[in-house]
Structures are given as C-alpha cells and as structure tokens.
Amino acid sequence: MEINHEVNQPNPDSPRNSKSPGKRQLRRNLSHVSSCSTRMTQKSFENYWSVENFSIQLELHQHGEFMLAPKFGDSEYEFVMKLFPNGKDEETTGYLSLFLLINKCPNPRLRFRVSFTVETADGPRSCHLNKNLVTINRSGIVTASKFFSLDILKSATSIYTPSDILTIGCSLTIFGESLTWPTNVFCPYSRKQNSSTNSRSGSYTPDSSSIEKAEEKPNEDRFPKLLESGEFSDFTVVASCGREFKTHMCVLSSRSDYFDALLRNKTTREYLEKRVTFEDISATTLDVILRHIYITNNGGTIEEHQLTPELVSATDRWLFYPNILLSERHDFRLMISSMRTLISEVISTNLTTQNIVGRITMAAELRLEDEYESLLEFFARHKKEAMESKPWAEMKKEKPEMTIKILEDALLHFEEPCGALDRRIIDRITLN
Image 1 (cartoon, rainbow, N blue to C red):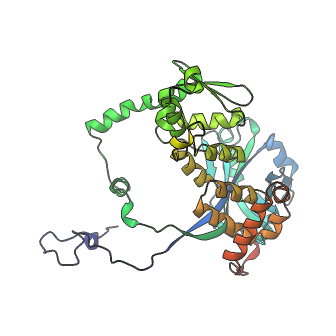
Image 2: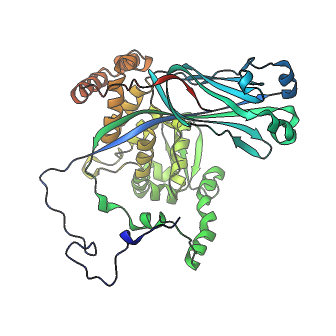
Image 3: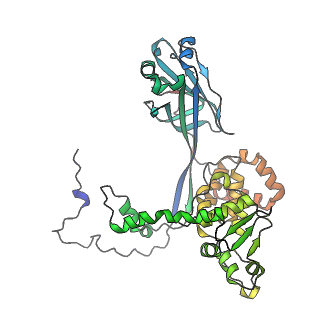
C-alpha cells in the first residue's frame, strides 16, 4: 500500500504566506483559559492453570463434562476458569472449550480485555478470539467454545503438553470508570522537541556520541550498588527500629534539599557525628526513600504496596528543615521532587472502595490538587460503599476534620450524577 505524505510536507518552491508555521505567531491574550484531564482506572489479573496427566483427563471426560480451576482475583473481583477437555457439546468435540465465569464484580457491568493462551515449550500460543475487548453484565460468562484443537495438541505433545501437562493462561485487564477533573492550564508548547523526534518512524543509525553513551550506561547502576554494599560510606541513616543504612553525603546532598541543608550546616550534631536518626520512620519506608535517592537516572518507580501513609508523611515532613534557627529558616522544596511525581503517578491507579479514603488523604497531605479532584470524583460515585468501609470508620475517629472536608468537597464539586449506565449489554459473550 502506498501512502501519500504530500499533505503534511510543505512545497519548498512555494513562498510562505502569513499563515505559514515557519514563524510561530503569538497567542492572543485570553481572559479565561481552562483545562481538564480524563483518566481511566485499570486493574490487571493473570492466572495460569496446569492440568497434569492431561492424556488421562481426555479419556475420562466426555464432551459436556468439565473441570473447574480455583478462584482468582482480589477482594472486589472473582473469576473462575472452566475447562471442557473434549468440548462443551457434540459440535465442539475435537476442541478444548474454555469458559471464564465472573463470580464477583463491584459494578453492574464489567468492561475488560481478555486473552487465553496455551503455555508451550516454545512460549505461549494465543487463541484467536472474535472479540478481545468485551462488555458484560455482572455474573456473566465469557466462552471460547473452540479454544484449541485437540489434533494440534496431540500432534506435538512435547511442545504443547510437555510431561503430559497442559498449562492454560488467562490474562485480564479491567477498565474502570473514566474520571475527569479540572487541571492546571495546559501549555502545548512546553513539550520538548526531542519527544516528537523520538516518536517518528524510520531507521536510526547511532552516531559515535550515542555509542559512547551506551557504553557508559552500566556506570549509572553503580549508585544503588553502593547503597547495598555500604562501600565508601561516610554517613549513617538510622530507622526507628535501629536498622542502619550506610550512605554517602555527596549522593544525599545532591538528590535531597533536606540532606543538602543538613550537611551544609557543619555545627549540627548530625554533621559532627555523621549520623541521623528518624524515630518515626520505619526501616521499610526509609529503604524505599533511600533507594529512590540512589537511582539517579530516572528515579525508578514506586510499587502500589509501597504507597503507604507513612511514606507520604515522611515525604511531606521533609518540606521544612526543623533544626535551622527560625530567623534562618527557609522553605525547602520536597525532599526530592521526583518522589512527589512518582507518588502522583501511582496514587490514582487500581482504585477500590477500600483504598479510596486513604488515597484521598494522601493526595490532600501532599497537596496534589489534580489527583485529589480525580480521587474525589471516584469517592462521590461510590460514597455509600466507601463510607461503609473500615478505613472510613477509622478516619472518622482519628481525623474527623478530614472526613468533613472530603464530604463537603464531594458534595460541592460532584452533586450531579456522573452519567447513566449503558444498558445495551448482554449477560453472556461468546468469543469464538
């Protein structure tokens, strides 16, 4: 297929007119500019089922007879795989039939992407499905009646059923609600030029400078190794439990405004003893923070299980340096700016009625305005379930002011219903 690019390419022989993009025109002064952002919540599951002595199972099961795998999912979602070794009926005899039963779902409908695989000695083999992205009612069934040919399985047992074991995989990505909230003004010209350059298709031949950078890349990983080994350490950070972390002043001060101020003041006890103790920060949280400091290339990532109130409180408390005299006190930025960015990226993912209260509290504590609005909309849509949760009951006792603030903000900004459900959905979807 030939693709015509002439529309997007200027003619070098034609003169530029007043509307030419060669010279960007100044934007008009506007009296009011607003922007918003929409994000879809997602949650992923994978489950693998190994059926041993598969050849015997084939002989024991007639068409229509099935096997059930254990349930998989989490506190909100629950799924079960159902396998018919010789097909679900006479029409599908000669094929494996695979069903996915939806036992539990918090919403009236479920939107998700699904894929079924047979794990082989050469890697996974996907089953061709008529539809991978489906919408189904709660307690529905997804069926793959002709999931995999038995003739193919029997033709190469060493590949498909090594050691007479059939392994089936199911991968799910659940798409939740689309949350929209107001954001700061969007500036389209703030994007870096290299981002558009890197996204262009075509071949790329590295020059000598890029080759040199590639050769230097292994050196970037030496900082985390220094933290793990403690080699050349000149400063000790101590957690509340007494666990010591052997660190390096040059790394701490270059990555953290807090440590930079601490180590520059040569009269403090911490500098003289080359040691600082945090009585209210656990070793687990301190380990996350220090590993983030020592990853100097991109700051790494924060896993969902690492996102705890203690981590947020530890990050927020270091906005100020308390040991400086009041007359000399300065407002320091967050301990490391990238830590706040990483928290903002993960705080709105995998939302449930059990964790939404804690996430809103974290966003408020870190003053993440955009994320707070997004989380607040989720709370407003599920406020009945969220207010019946254990975290809400605990917060009413420990932080009553915060519960009042959340309720007031939810009523103020999200009084209107967020949209009616699309009822043109079915209870059962057949994928092949």
